[in-house]
Image (tube, rainbow, N blue to C red; front, side, top):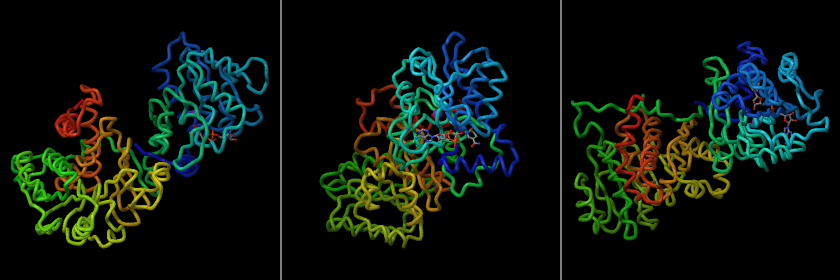
Length: 502
Ligand SMILES: NC(=O)C1=CN([C@@H]2O[C@H](COP(=O)(O)OP(=O)(O)OC[C@H]3O[C@@H](n4cnc5c(N)ncnc54)[C@H](O)[C@@H]3O)[C@@H](O)[C@H]2O)[C@@H](O)CC1
Ligand SMILES: [K+]
């Protein structure tokens, strides 16, 4: 399932109409009919339904939806917001069809009965006022109608995007319809996944509108949701013939006086995600505690402060950062790993604060960075607010500029590849908002990079299953009554959730 910007969606529509030859009226019929189909699954014949139609193509979808509901035996009250003569193109065409069906259309501009009062008395409001074409502060009467939608007790179902909300990240906006459901047309919009805008969508359903096969390949960059089916088709199957070395030799480097547990969490997660041979490099004073907590791991105590005595070229993958600290010795260690590691290198937590980004360009093997917004801000020199306003662009820019994978952690973690593709993760919940869950992810990424055929799948699957473990936990335990190691304990449930056939 793709995630697009507003202008990418317009390009897709244009290609479909101009190059593929599908008339715009047909595309709008497909869109409206598909949206109505979803809405009809919730509608009952006794509900009072109002359809609010704007002046653009989103309003055009509304006309189609009204006609489809009529076909299904529901008589919605349709309201046209602009003057009739403002309608053009496909929207005007479908307005005409609606009138031909004998359906009466009320006019907001005509005065008389107030649309706001009808919204207040409705059971269901279908919001087809504004879609991806919105720009700037809402003008009247849209602003008042959006406010009325947000005050009514009715169920609010938005078409494509809640009116007022931008499709893209990084756009200034003021107010929007708070939808209960949004039937998104063809592809997710970026704003479906941003912390401030996502809640306005309510529950999202994406419907197909008949774009021809291969249309998305015409877009310059692939940006999509990483779904259960992606995990199912890429998760390696373990075989009886495997050896302990089949899944690689992994190294985790971390820990300091104040944060001894972080590398242990990463190590336990790596072991519980399939790593056959794991070495933990950590301060000498913790090795006995580590040995009793993780007897499966080999231990490599730091010598002379934070010097790594292990030959890092012998490992298939290394992860560095959890609990490491940020002093000069730690910075040297990160630098050493950047230059000497001969396999995949995963950098997390403190390592992200002390690395010099320019050195990443010297890596000849893949590098994976797993920052949260604050760490990505530190890496890019932007403020946290700037990163959160444009996480897609910020992580894309960093990943492509430095040739690394960037896993930007958040409610919807975004994985960016060095060649500019992006995968949005759908799993996870408030359980993950606690210390140490990032260390767990680091361990999982380490394990998966050594077991998967492609690095894209390794990273995206680790993120997916990390979230799925939290989702499995949340089914049985309240999110406040959880500690981070419970997420590791729930990993078998996460693996089961993708392996089951239902
Ligand atoms: N062929 C296509 O392009 C298709 C488009 N579709 C629908 O069309 C939508 C996009 O259509 P449009 O590009 O026509 O745009 P919209 O329908 O989202 O809005 C454009 C209209 O909104 C007005 N407007 C913009 N900003 C405003 C503001 N701040 N305050 C008040 N009015 C404002 C503009 O004057 C214009 O009349 C999609 O979201 C989707 O619902 C679908 O029908 C599928 C096919
Ligand atoms: K809308």
